[in-house]
Length: 281
Image (cartoon, rainbow, N blue to C red; front, side, top):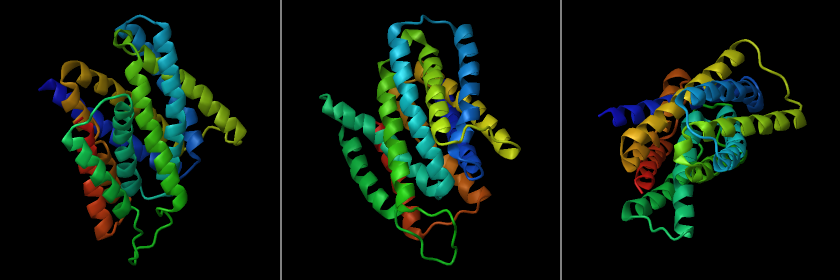
């Protein structure tokens, strides 16, 4: 089933992109990583949009631009949380909010989620409590789940979830153009934030290579996500794509040797389960 393959590839590339971005943000400020990634994505997505075609409408510009502004703040908070805290904890928690916020907006607009989504919300609350527990074992690390990291994770997950609502409003006939305007508006926001915080400098060496890698991976994730949604059922594709933190967590444990407590491990498993149940709505 080609749709399932696209959805799985999207989840994997999203997860790897988050890991690479988190590693880069541990070397340089998150904004400097985005200063490289966002313009590259805007140019490459623009070229792809010209090839794919589709009309450019005011709705595509408006909703794409709104999505881009929100995503710029969300990804800055996400990379900052990944750079300062444990990647294996931050990523699943952000994914919970990423899946839960669209459901909450839908309920506010009159939609009624199914039983699975309701159970998923309860699991998410328990998962947040368990994952937020600090490990007291011998493996001390400078990357701890502090209150600051917790707030950055909440902002990141909430913003990315709300952005799905914005992107959903964009006309489907416009194909890739909403993503193009999203990256253009996001680039302007990132440049403004970088200028205000005196981070208007491109990284060098390995952080620069990692930032370029983030851009390429993010484009692959977005394109395969669209292909999955166009060739498979929306509900099934969403479930697989929402499991992107699995790749991030595995890489953090294998490459960075991150260690978590037993209860944090249980919480992460519950978080992944809650994402699937909430996305199933």
